[in-house]
Image (tube, rainbow, N blue to C red; front, top):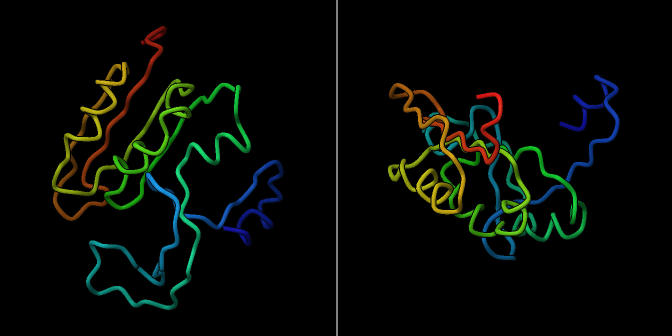
Length: 144
């Protein structure tokens, strides 16, 4: 990501080497070519120990009292957990997009609907496609 941003000469982007969840802690993250929970043939290149934070920690540090246009999560089946750690950020968000990877495909959309979002799309993708679903939620239906 750092190399891509440098080549593209993009400015105003702050990368954080952190994982998100519903609680603070540390986690060992494996990465490599084709790595993912749905890729048994993946070749793990390396593992890195990263700080885990709730999205609300990030929001408090960098975005408090600002409009959050969108939250986009595609984190290998941990979308619902990450959103549990983001009640303040989600309350400020206008739109949330969640890539669904796990067997409980309805939970992310159900939680967003319960939080007052309108569900615009709850798609299921064919087997073998990752993510295997998508939930699109919005607070603003103007223009739709």
